[in-house]
Image (cartoon, rainbow, N blue to C red; front, top):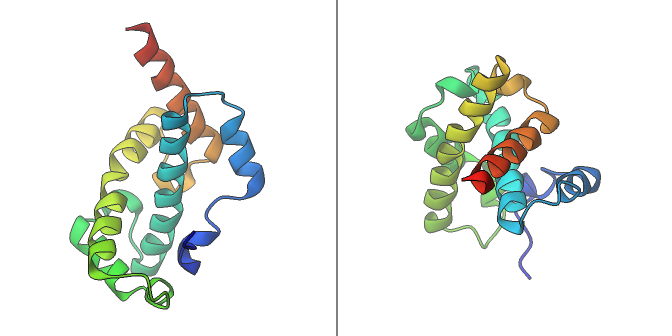
Length: 130
């Protein structure tokens, strides 16, 4: 199995993975939590480097950052298609992150993993009631 580039390898701890698993949500929902969390953590680095809030990041800025990320490019398995896909994934993650931040009344950068998990749990429960 291919390993994640170093920049992506440590975005969730074993304890955080266990915390997500304890929700007992369907696999796709737990995957969504993990994916959103990976993106959120990566975007924190982008926003800090660009001295901008995550909320104001634009897709072209995210793409430029990913294209210039040496940690990603140190992995021979990273190609232009991955860069484009990963940039799109990061930009798409802003939708749930903005919704979570709005619901909590806090900037995306100040969210906690528990808040992200709670949002997905609430939305999963709402989906199953309809």
